[in-house]
Image (tube, rainbow, N blue to C red; front, side, top):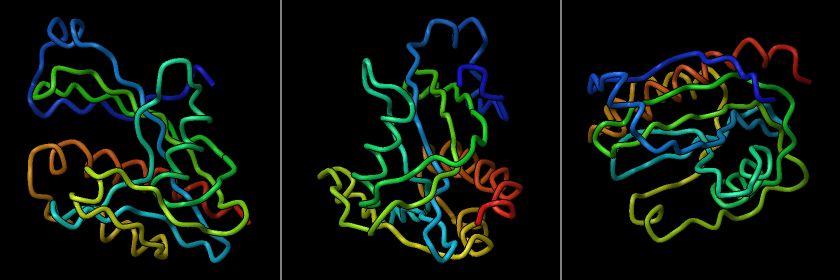
Length: 174
Protein backbone atom coordinates (compact mmCIF):
# COMPACT_ATOMS: atom_id res chain seq x y z
CA UNK A 1 0.00 0.00 0.00
CA UNK A 2 2.95 2.33 0.55
CA UNK A 3 3.92 2.48 -3.12
CA UNK A 4 0.72 4.00 -4.51
CA UNK A 5 1.43 5.57 -7.92
CA UNK A 6 1.53 9.37 -7.96
CA UNK A 7 -0.73 10.59 -10.76
CA UNK A 8 -0.33 14.34 -10.44
CA UNK A 9 1.47 17.17 -8.67
CA UNK A 10 -0.86 20.17 -8.30
CA UNK A 11 1.05 23.40 -7.80
CA UNK A 12 -1.09 26.24 -9.21
CA UNK A 13 0.50 28.81 -6.88
CA UNK A 14 4.00 27.85 -8.09
CA UNK A 15 5.52 26.98 -4.72
CA UNK A 16 9.20 26.17 -5.16
CA UNK A 17 10.47 22.70 -4.25
CA UNK A 18 12.52 24.33 -1.43
CA UNK A 19 9.41 26.05 -0.09
CA UNK A 20 7.23 22.92 -0.38
CA UNK A 21 9.92 20.89 1.41
CA UNK A 22 9.30 23.07 4.51
CA UNK A 23 5.52 22.48 4.53
CA UNK A 24 3.97 20.09 7.02
CA UNK A 25 2.39 17.09 5.27
CA UNK A 26 -1.35 16.43 5.49
CA UNK A 27 -2.39 12.99 4.28
CA UNK A 28 -5.92 12.25 3.11
CA UNK A 29 -7.89 9.25 1.88
CA UNK A 30 -10.54 9.62 -0.83
CA UNK A 31 -12.70 7.24 -2.85
CA UNK A 32 -14.86 6.78 -5.85
CA UNK A 33 -17.71 4.99 -4.04
CA UNK A 34 -20.21 2.94 -6.04
CA UNK A 35 -23.62 1.78 -4.88
CA UNK A 36 -25.48 -1.37 -6.01
CA UNK A 37 -26.77 0.51 -9.09
CA UNK A 38 -23.20 1.57 -10.02
CA UNK A 39 -23.95 5.20 -9.15
CA UNK A 40 -21.02 7.26 -7.84
CA UNK A 41 -21.14 9.23 -4.59
CA UNK A 42 -20.19 12.90 -4.89
CA UNK A 43 -20.46 15.64 -2.33
CA UNK A 44 -22.11 18.73 -3.69
CA UNK A 45 -20.63 21.85 -2.10
CA UNK A 46 -23.57 24.13 -2.85
CA UNK A 47 -22.19 27.40 -1.48
CA UNK A 48 -18.96 27.11 -3.47
CA UNK A 49 -20.53 25.63 -6.62
CA UNK A 50 -18.50 22.44 -7.01
CA UNK A 51 -18.53 18.69 -6.38
CA UNK A 52 -15.91 16.65 -4.56
CA UNK A 53 -15.18 13.03 -3.78
CA UNK A 54 -15.91 11.70 -0.29
CA UNK A 55 -12.83 11.57 1.88
CA UNK A 56 -10.64 13.66 4.10
CA UNK A 57 -7.70 13.93 6.40
CA UNK A 58 -6.03 10.92 8.00
CA UNK A 59 -5.80 11.40 11.77
CA UNK A 60 -2.67 10.61 13.82
CA UNK A 61 -2.18 6.87 14.18
CA UNK A 62 -4.98 6.07 11.73
CA UNK A 63 -4.28 4.00 8.63
CA UNK A 64 -5.58 4.98 5.19
CA UNK A 65 -8.35 2.40 5.03
CA UNK A 66 -9.63 3.25 8.52
CA UNK A 67 -9.61 6.96 7.61
CA UNK A 68 -11.52 6.23 4.41
CA UNK A 69 -14.12 4.14 6.28
CA UNK A 70 -14.59 6.94 8.83
CA UNK A 71 -14.82 9.69 6.21
CA UNK A 72 -17.34 7.74 4.09
CA UNK A 73 -19.49 7.09 7.15
CA UNK A 74 -19.36 10.81 8.08
CA UNK A 75 -19.81 12.31 4.61
CA UNK A 76 -22.07 9.88 2.74
CA UNK A 77 -23.45 7.74 5.59
CA UNK A 78 -22.07 4.50 4.17
CA UNK A 79 -19.85 1.66 5.22
CA UNK A 80 -17.57 0.81 2.29
CA UNK A 81 -15.36 -2.00 1.03
CA UNK A 82 -12.23 -1.01 -0.90
CA UNK A 83 -12.03 -2.83 -4.24
CA UNK A 84 -9.11 -1.06 -5.92
CA UNK A 85 -6.44 1.64 -5.82
CA UNK A 86 -6.59 4.63 -8.17
CA UNK A 87 -3.38 6.47 -7.19
CA UNK A 88 -2.22 9.53 -5.30
CA UNK A 89 -2.19 13.27 -5.92
CA UNK A 90 0.27 15.65 -4.25
CA UNK A 91 -0.75 19.29 -3.76
CA UNK A 92 1.54 22.14 -2.77
CA UNK A 93 -1.05 24.38 -1.13
CA UNK A 94 0.90 27.60 -0.75
CA UNK A 95 -2.23 29.45 0.49
CA UNK A 96 -2.30 27.16 3.56
CA UNK A 97 1.43 26.36 3.72
CA UNK A 98 0.84 22.60 3.52
CA UNK A 99 1.76 19.71 1.28
CA UNK A 100 -1.28 17.48 0.93
CA UNK A 101 -1.11 13.90 -0.32
CA UNK A 102 -4.42 12.30 -1.27
CA UNK A 103 -4.57 8.51 -1.60
CA UNK A 104 -7.51 7.46 -3.74
CA UNK A 105 -9.39 4.17 -3.90
CA UNK A 106 -12.38 2.61 -5.59
CA UNK A 107 -14.88 1.35 -3.03
CA UNK A 108 -18.29 -0.26 -2.91
CA UNK A 109 -21.12 0.44 -0.49
CA UNK A 110 -21.55 -2.33 2.10
CA UNK A 111 -25.06 -2.74 3.46
CA UNK A 112 -27.62 0.04 3.55
CA UNK A 113 -26.96 3.71 2.90
CA UNK A 114 -27.36 5.68 6.09
CA UNK A 115 -27.41 9.36 7.01
CA UNK A 116 -24.20 11.39 6.84
CA UNK A 117 -22.85 13.00 10.02
CA UNK A 118 -21.61 16.26 8.51
CA UNK A 119 -19.71 18.78 10.60
CA UNK A 120 -21.12 22.30 11.18
CA UNK A 121 -18.49 23.61 8.71
CA UNK A 122 -19.56 21.10 6.06
CA UNK A 123 -23.23 21.91 6.61
CA UNK A 124 -22.61 25.65 6.36
CA UNK A 125 -20.69 25.07 3.10
CA UNK A 126 -23.80 23.32 1.78
CA UNK A 127 -22.35 19.78 1.63
CA UNK A 128 -24.89 17.31 0.30
CA UNK A 129 -24.22 13.75 -0.90
CA UNK A 130 -25.56 12.89 -4.35
CA UNK A 131 -25.53 9.50 -6.12
CA UNK A 132 -25.26 9.76 -9.89
CA UNK A 133 -24.13 7.68 -12.89
CA UNK A 134 -20.39 7.77 -13.54
CA UNK A 135 -20.51 9.74 -16.83
CA UNK A 136 -22.76 12.35 -15.26
CA UNK A 137 -20.44 12.55 -12.23
CA UNK A 138 -17.46 13.28 -14.51
CA UNK A 139 -19.46 15.90 -16.41
CA UNK A 140 -20.72 17.66 -13.27
CA UNK A 141 -17.33 17.68 -11.62
CA UNK A 142 -15.34 18.82 -14.64
CA UNK A 143 -17.74 21.62 -15.61
CA UNK A 144 -18.46 23.07 -12.17
CA UNK A 145 -17.52 26.75 -11.92
CA UNK A 146 -16.02 26.51 -8.44
CA UNK A 147 -16.01 29.75 -6.49
CA UNK A 148 -12.76 30.25 -4.62
CA UNK A 149 -9.15 29.23 -5.13
CA UNK A 150 -9.26 26.03 -3.07
CA UNK A 151 -12.16 24.52 -5.01
CA UNK A 152 -11.17 25.83 -8.44
CA UNK A 153 -7.40 25.27 -8.36
CA UNK A 154 -7.06 22.24 -6.08
CA UNK A 155 -10.17 20.20 -5.28
CA UNK A 156 -11.90 20.19 -8.70
CA UNK A 157 -8.77 19.41 -10.81
CA UNK A 158 -7.66 16.73 -8.29
CA UNK A 159 -11.01 14.99 -7.99
CA UNK A 160 -11.79 15.25 -11.74
CA UNK A 161 -8.49 13.51 -12.50
CA UNK A 162 -9.12 10.81 -9.85
CA UNK A 163 -12.66 10.22 -11.10
CA UNK A 164 -11.49 9.90 -14.73
CA UNK A 165 -8.59 7.65 -13.67
CA UNK A 166 -11.05 5.39 -11.79
CA UNK A 167 -13.05 4.92 -14.98
CA UNK A 168 -10.70 2.17 -16.12
CA UNK A 169 -11.48 0.17 -12.96
CA UNK A 170 -15.22 0.56 -13.13
CA UNK A 171 -15.74 -1.66 -16.15
CA UNK A 172 -14.26 -4.60 -14.23
CA UNK A 173 -16.33 -4.13 -11.06
CA UNK A 174 -19.52 -6.10 -10.81
